Amino acid sequence: GDRTTMNAELKTKRAARKTSYKKGDDTRENILAAALSCFNSEGIADVTCRTIAKQAGLSAGNVYYYFANKDVILTELRVALEHAIEALLLDMEQRRLNETAARRDAATQWLGLVWDWRFLFLNISQLIRTDPKSRPVLMAIRQRSIKLHQELYEEHWARQGLTLTDSDHKFCHDLAASNWILTVHGVQYVALDREDGETTREDFEEAINQFQIAGRIIFDRNLQKRLGEVATGSVENS
Image 1 (tube, rainbow, N blue to C red):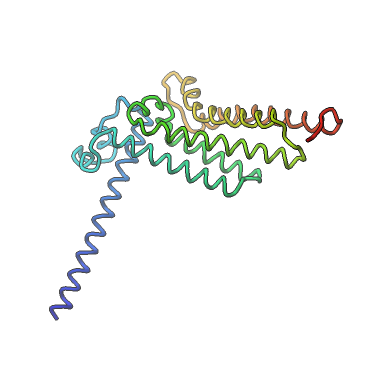
Image 2: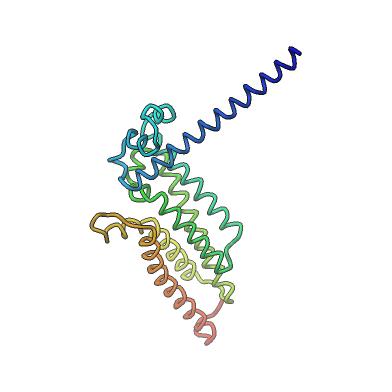
């Protein structure tokens, strides 16, 4: 009897602790989601922990219980973005995205990440000053993204029957780097078009798509030119 009662009490306490942990995790995620919304709409400088608490429907004390200050929240959000980008790049590397639909899906996901964390891309310099550890991490992500996209372009050319020259490799690298610059700084470009600085995801994606169309035209023209040179024998495909 006593042993059965004790076991039941222990199970009840464990269940209560699990519920408490889950509630704590949910509160923490709620605060981060509220912070992301506030930073995106108001920028970093004008947001305080009280602003975040109000957005989350909590007291300021609750926010400070989970996060010592605003800089800690910023670091948490930066790490969350890094993990999201890492997952997307890993998926792209594994799938190689040879199909047009797969590449389009990956591009949409990437634009979604940039949009959802747009305050970070609008304030990269401030973020690096606040959290110096973020710079090498962001640089590594940039390098990996550019390298992956360069390889995808080169694989596309190779499937057309071309053996790439050094200038071809450089062209693919430059185009991949241009795509990075375009998406990362696209938020700033679109925001300047609006007097109030407010913009929507639709505005952002439309502008990026316009530039990407131009990039694809340049890529296709260069590819067709190389194919033509090989076909006519004006250059040696070796």
